[in-house]
Length: 96
Figure 1 (cartoon, helix red, strand yellow):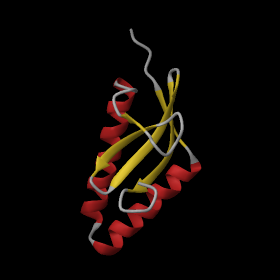
Figure 2 (spheres, one colour):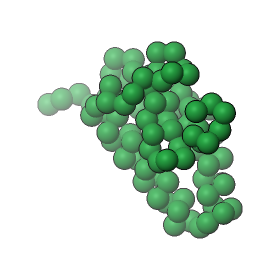
Figure 3 (cartoon, one colour):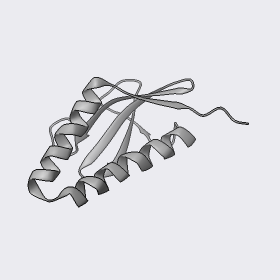
């Protein structure tokens, strides 16, 4: 039986997720918030299976960047069997 990788979300990443959820909720509805959470869940499932499957980040040294939606990216670092999610950000911002 294969050992499953662990995904750990930093405080910054969780705060960014909350900010994005609040923004989506203010502009649209709970349904769209659910779609966003589904994207995060799908990212987590895929990154556990293919930790090096996303491109290397040009901004965050030693990290990878997963574009989970045209407007949202997840930055993470692979540390053996642990995947540390560093941050989540809006691709339209200056950091992209």
